[in-house]
Image (tube, rainbow, N blue to C red; front, side, top):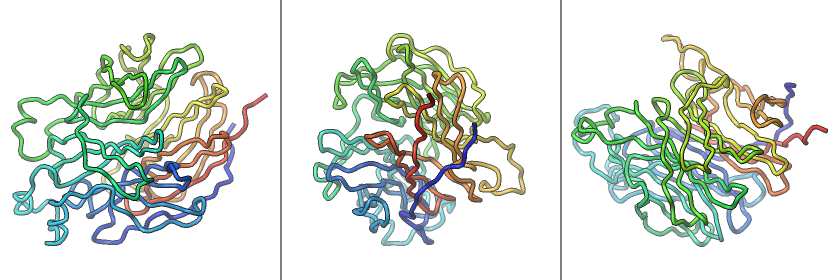
Length: 369
């Protein structure tokens, strides 16, 4: 059944040139009860030296949003911003790049009153990036210094934390092994063709983390999410470059994974989110479309639209509810958020055409009887 949803929404941030780039918007309920949206901004593109991570907060349940607060912007980035940033393809500009100048993000965890943001810190061209965390114990009013994520400190993305029914915590990762070609290249990251996708496993969300064996993921930006089925199996879905999501399963609680195989879920090479409800239903927040790119079309014409919520009541065999959230023209990208405690609403944020950040509160349909 396909139904049209009733929604509430608000503009969190409207980017204006020359610092209009927005990406990886992530909604979280802050420890003090406020709403927060974390995202990468700065500059006109990703990657470039001006990229940094900010937080916008709402004190009135998402109706209005305050100006961005800096989560992490390096001293080197501050100098670049003060000098004025040339276009990111300018060779002379490239010569000034150095490690630690730019930052993006991949996950925000809130546990026991502490916010932890997973960062990727790079040289403005995303070359051999470092993985670090930065934390706040006062709802984002102040932040500590970045700390390397020791279990996987380079060339990785850490994805959404998940607690399994048996009590363990799972932290999905995508890792790109260093090759001689990549290691010796001063520009770019060489190849994204051989990602390894798996999970870290811990008894608490603070660790210590055990690294599960990875599966060889689909080529490209293999963003992954994990969810548990009713029988205890774990399923990992991953973005791919071929127009559908890929799937792997674990029968030993994330220690090993089967080989990835394509699903029939269309995906325009974009990030998505999985959620498991307490009644066993599984929700998928994504762009359920694939259109072959045309040279004369812009990205907003061909990809990442519409934005939808699908819900399965039979362990992802079928999707009984397929809710079109919005098909407003343009690219509706990288949604991330959380289900409310009473499971009546899904709160999330996404970027619109890489220059605006949108907050959405979506009612979750009740389980079928």
